[in-house]
Image: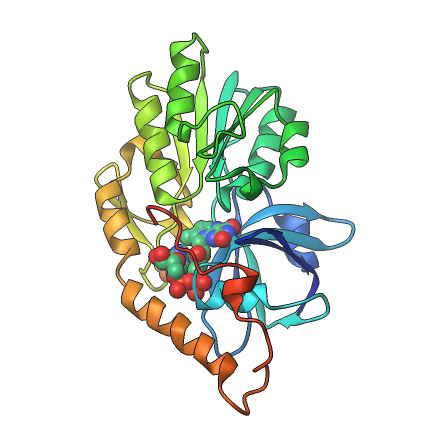
Length: 300
Ligand SMILES: Cc1cc2nc3c(=O)[nH]c(=O)nc-3n(C[C@H](O)[C@H](O)[C@H](O)COP(=O)(O)OP(=O)(O)OC[C@H]3O[C@@H](n4cnc5c(N)ncnc54)[C@H](O)[C@@H]3O)c2cc1C
Ligand code: FES
């Protein structure tokens, strides 16, 4: 069991979870993830490590409330225990001295890019961070990201920041304006990663994405996270999650991620009804829609 040290809502649909997990905190590096289960009857889900404190033995993840498991996590509090919080899993992100690196993030990817941007900065790169949010009130971890960035841009559809362009529009604007980028990293919903890759493709800028296929065991045993990269079959949990975005078969990834959508929606409705059923403990708990919003990520 791993004790939750903190669970807070950061913005309407994204929560932060800090967990006491000394073994994970001791070993994790940028780009890795943990498998988490909120209760013994639930499913295991992968969440990217957004930060850690080795002395405290604490690991921080940020998650977007989209379905049953993430809504269950959104109702947990400091002091609660997680039956499963295993990791670190996945291959570390490639960190080196590349020159100027574009680091793009949206929704949960805003937290997921943080350790990568920090390591790239420490390695001597010029880090240009690009954040994509639907609206200004969905921006979080701005201070943490600004600290590890040489330039910091936010795109939001509500005209509250410099641009309303999606992230690919901002990348194009910077490249058209003469920015010479040597590498790019993009993490967020599938559409954000795909479109960031399209924006860097013509300029030949190697772009790493952290793929998010459905995962079950997270250890290469079940095959659920199969994806095609460069014409070869890969398993995101053990061969990734980072891959060269220009080699990913995005059509297949978009389609496989929707495989269980009906079941996922039924599961969420069933769980929400169970919270309101007479006699069920927790019947007075506010529905998760009011704590997080059951929103599916655009393009997910
Ligand atoms: C390596 C990796 C790292 C991830 N990191 C984060 C993170 O840091 N924060 C975050 O909010 N989300 C992250 N995700 C996505 C997260 O795992 C899913 O949103 C979560 O599993 C949804 O579970 P649910 O029961 O709440 O929703 P469900 O009802 O199961 O599904 C809702 C949506 O989530 C997708 N999904 C469902 N199960 C999985 C699964 N096991 N793996 C991936 N996607 C799934 C579905 O395609 C669907 O669109 C990551 C995914 C991967 C593969
Ligand atoms: S999650 Fe089972 S093989 Fe990757």
